[in-house]
Amino acid sequence: MREAGYVTMLDPLQNVLGRRMGGLLYFPALMGETFWSAAILSALGSTLAVILNINNTASILVSAGIAVIYTFLGGLYSVAYTDVVQFFCIFLGLWLAVPFCVMNEAVGSLALNETNWLGSMEPASPEWGLWVDFWLLLICGGIPWQVYFQRVLSCKTPKQAQMLSFSASFGCIISAVPACIIGAVALAADWSHTSFGHTPMGYESKLVLPLVMKNFTPEWVSLIGLGAVSAAVMSSADSSILSASSMFARNIYKNVFRQKASDQEVIWVLRASMVMVASIACTIGIVIHSIYYLFKLCGDLVYVILFPQLLMVVHCRHYVNTYGSFMAFWIGLLVRILGGEPQIGVPATIHYPLYDEATGQQNFPFRTASMLISFTSLVVFSAIAKFTFTRGLLPARFDVCNCFDLEHTKNNKSEELTTRTLSCVDQPGSPEEVVSLLNSAEKTLTPAIKEEA
Image (cartoon, rainbow, N blue to C red; front, side, top):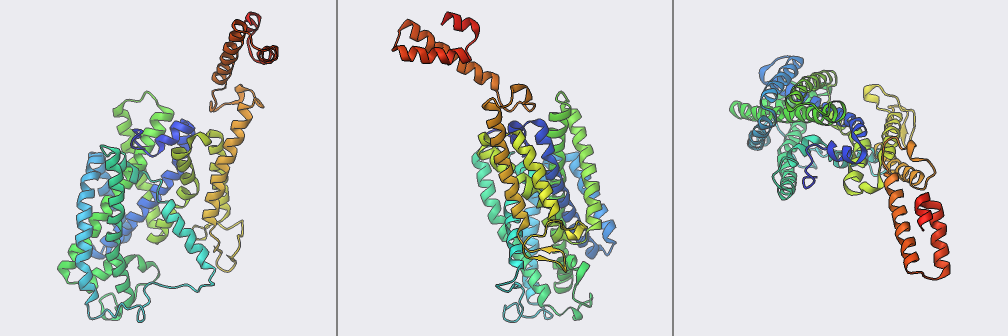
């Protein structure tokens, strides 16, 4: 994608599938980025609520306002520079807090035989299907994100883009380790000896990281650690808001509605989009309390709809077209909605195997099944459309998406037969060959060329 000179993740989709189909595929990307922004703002609001002892809603609104203001003024430059600060802050701040958390008197042993902080499932448990479903969702559904591609596609060379991706994967693992340790500390700790007074439960679970730092580390370590988390989350919030807005400004507004829009006009549309995305993300972050659930939800439609489309467009573009993409979009969306989502009030219409009637939970990996159905629909309907038009089963005027250059194909065939027929006249072959060519010409060539032949 870097070699092709793309600017956003939607560029290859619009190049292969057309501007309007690429615009339709923007919506699952927008929903993913918006839920991701909501998760980030919710996490930041929780951190500030613990540090400053202010209301969670006010914390989220203030955080979003700050992120929008400096991204509004600085654009990608502000995002890039805060990313550098983010890396050092989160790495140093979290690792600094780990030894103090582990050695605190109120924290028990982290040995697995004493504190099962890994969790467990029975070998025959139906929840393994759900676990595998989310495992695949977080891996494959984590690929089609503009928040990642805006970094990769801004690299100077494709080689740098590759190195950035590989090094980032190791950086993610290293940065995740202290967060896992802090979570284990929270489970092993005796919270009755803290100012909080009890083990965080339910809604309070989202406060675990800042609460551990505040209650189990010295005050100066707590301030550094929580400041690091705040800086890191703020940086992620601005990049997510910017990525959703940049796709709208370039791929929707400019490519679909206003092809002749000036750069200044696009910039103002970008800024207005940032305010809109941030407002929606704030609302979701305030209403839905679980950060981890928001994190899973943000990748859902991206995994089911966008992943198979981007995969085929980048690697097998000749096997897909707009008709297949359109059908795959709606079939994938329909199947996913019918699978239900109990936490946001969407009942399950399709009860897959291992369905839990009591909780309304699908233990079958139905998200992966929905993705595979979407992928199959994309390939099959694209093949059907190609066969229908290229074999002449439908005339060219019905190709409303202009996916197939049928006139060009017909002209090429006519020219080839003309050349072969006229060369046969100049240098006659066997009578059978002449008759065969003339029969082909009778069906294909124009009247003038037939007469000449």
